[in-house]
Image 1 (cartoon, one colour):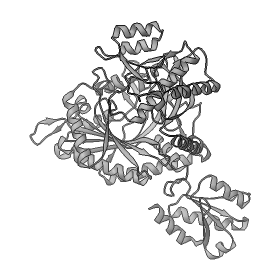
Image 2 (tube, rainbow, N blue to C red):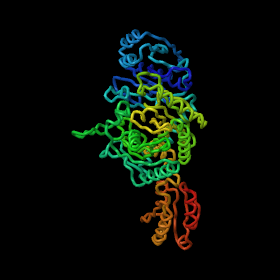
Image 3 (cartoon, one colour):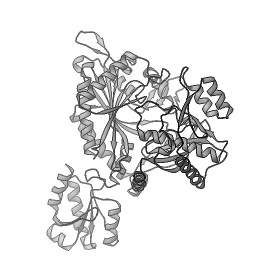
Image 4 (cartoon, rainbow, N blue to C red):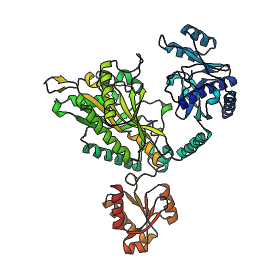
Length: 585
């Protein structure tokens, strides 16, 4: 099964090519390992993969051989022919081939589901499709790397070998992808984070728990202060709700049933309640709302919190700052009446746009994430409230003239959401901001307000995050800027370098002038050559390097050099302070 994905006609042509390439990969692997057990192989962004249970560990030489076989199959231009089998026949056929993973997949399909296969030459695979017409039309590809993957993402199930491939329409696009990949390696936030002294990980603390050094904390604090001040300007009130919560609250909200795998183990108080490390804020904010009576005149009420949350991500899924177990969300919950949904969505949208613009993200798209039609899926069963929430979110997007694409199955378990997916300078996409509409949790947790009719009503809650999580957003920013942060965000905005010892006093007075003006400045009086100090400041990507000598001390100037080598010449210190104020305003 090259993944039992959506087979509808709207799937893009490149998606079909990548899907077909995963079949070509499986056919080539079976030529090398006739007893291989096939798992799944879906198309993905930039390419495809397939998971295999193999008799031995793959080597780089195996990839070379498999890729050569794939090119032969591509050249043969084999047509892909679709066929269907009744469930009993499909199971018998896969059992006869000893393909136990396929048998499990078939057994998990709903009764009445059409079970289809695709055949190319002598190779047949369980698959819903769609595909291109023949193997010759898959485009330009290259096998990329091998990774381990647990069957169905469950670390208690067998570990398989996953082969990744990259595929584009043309060889030029494929070459450009690998050029971008090399650039991405240079921008890797994990490497730059160490080089710039921003954050570290320690086995003594634990995997997935980042530790921020002083420079990293400065960036975190600057980001948080900017967003906190902006939220205050937009009418948000900041709250604090702690780190642990009684488990019973998550049972009421529905998170226990739908989010348990992501929670850390319970903390049991003998003779008392069971607690959990807080994995999300919404039940806490709704509890806070319930501590006071509310009238329709009080709404909308906007609770914001920079809260550290704890999620038990699987060790194999951890990745630098972009996937951690300890994360800080700039989270907000807006309690409003149904009539206020559109105006609150508009306000949140305006705030998100302002923040993304400030951080240099101008290229983004919106995904309307909806529930799917599977009756066994995670989504709360309440068609009326789902329809109300979905209609309200669509109206809000349409009234703000926001273009969006719909994605079934990507909603939160309690409601639909608008996800903002930004594109960085390398063209990579990151899901950052989100606005969710929730009619379900506030009712479960007993949230009420007194309406104009003097009767109790349940408020609607809009869940809203601007940067998602501070850690992930910082990881994205490091790579977006390649560590060269804009001056307002840089941990050190200027470094003063005295030419010789007699200039130390003037250098120290200069750094004090900058600090008194509110800027982050350092002085380097080490016994090193000026050339070495400049080179090290460049490596640290400090926006401004100020060299001071006899003439500067006499004239009250600084010789200014921008990161990257542009020499701005000697500037009076007062003028340089004014320049920094204008640049960081």
